Length: 382
Picture: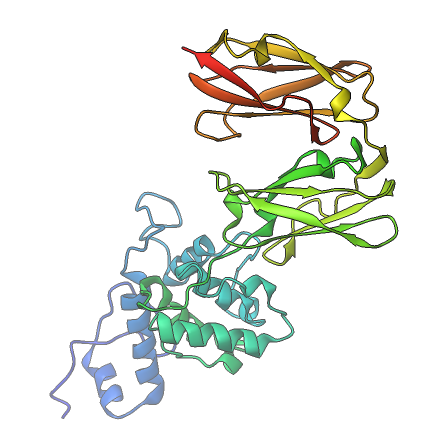
């Protein structure tokens, strides 16, 4: 038996590591004799060498200090994990930083985006539940065996080498077909804008409009809650524009004067700056008493890339602000920027620069309602 010496192991048990493991006959004898410490040391050395040290992982650049082949196995694994995980989850060790079960959830979702997108909503106090759910998903859909158990991972005295062995499987993980990938929603990336959520400029009985852009926020549903000064909820209509910015147009019609509250949620979570606090002023003016004039409303004479203008006279119309929406020949309203400025009491000037030839629709509103003869058809010539 002793003549069948393996091709040399040296390194004396424990977690000693050499870049090129060497074996000798004396150590091989201990292994054949069943010396557990030596056997475990050999296994750990092989794990370090073949699972962690040798592979060139995706973050590595050979000439980058600290990240190339000169890094220790522990550094390589830690560097890879830190590159994978989001900045708001700083990981600096293989023990205590993993005890609440959220870090392993984040790693699972980083390796397979959408497999565990809600890891950041998990309660750290439910550590075992968090770790078990994430590790079960990793085992089933990433093919990562649970070399360490969830209850061991959340133990403050978790073994570092066991954690490294388990985590070293993730760099080579491959998502299986049929995995329950969920769209990731990030309400913090939602953008809201428009007069309807501004502190001033809205009137009673006048449609208050605002817009919710969701392009960068992933998939989710827009929810708007409008609460009047009496604490009562008022209706808000939401219409999806189906444009490149994934915009939702929201309209509510205030029924009373005073401080309103507008809560906007996306995917069940409030968006930045929500709730909004628009103050609703007295009854809105009468759009039918507005007058308009200027070349920008004429059927002909407007040219591509040439600035044009028109003015709105609302001096006799009462309270309200002017709004202009320009729709291009393809029916899109987010292509041609429009500038509307108040130039005097009840006087507004609108300027725009058309970018393409064809029939444009110029929609003019006062106090949220269309003025007479709006929309205006403007043929833009090249």
